[in-house]
Image 1: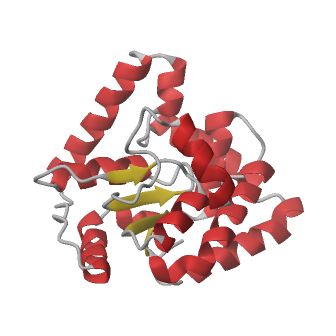
Image 2: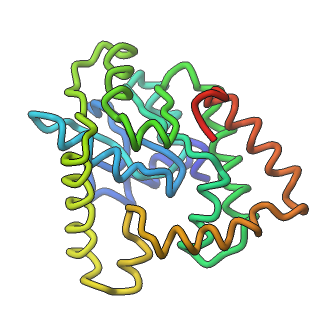
Image 3: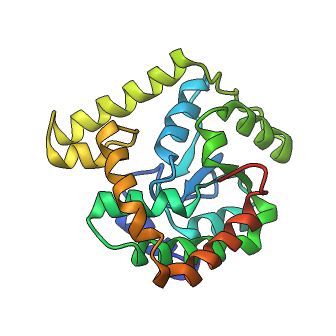
Length: 227
């Protein structure tokens, strides 16, 4: 359902009617999207931190329909693409599920947005998390916008993570299991668990689906830019 704008977008606007920064609107200035667990929280917080004035954003639906709608409306859009070998174990750890469902969902999401590749700026996860300023520069060049570039240095990165953690504590409290699972930043415990789950992602039974995902990934991210 979330791959088709005619079905998803009206429902999204109703469901998230209390959040004017969720679903894309005609007056949205920038869309920041990606498949779940691809770092969009960091990208949104870092982008907002860099701007001298508020910018009307749409983000965090993790829906292909949002990207497609933004492209059709010619709204500047950033699509974060993270390799499935990293995303799938992250979903497995977050939701305590097997490898196939998130891998199928990853393929479906990216195959759906691929035909619209010319209408958004792609950033690999690795680039977004190390030099978001370059990504914003490409957006400005592509769409004629004048967004302030994020200075990607240790001090600013710490500010972004502090914002994320403060919001997480406000929502879930301190030290709660849900808060730990939902925290949108790396932790040693989470990374260790994802490494343990990597074998399930690499199971022979998923080889055909992994190959399909790899082809889609390479259609969006050149081989020199990603995993």
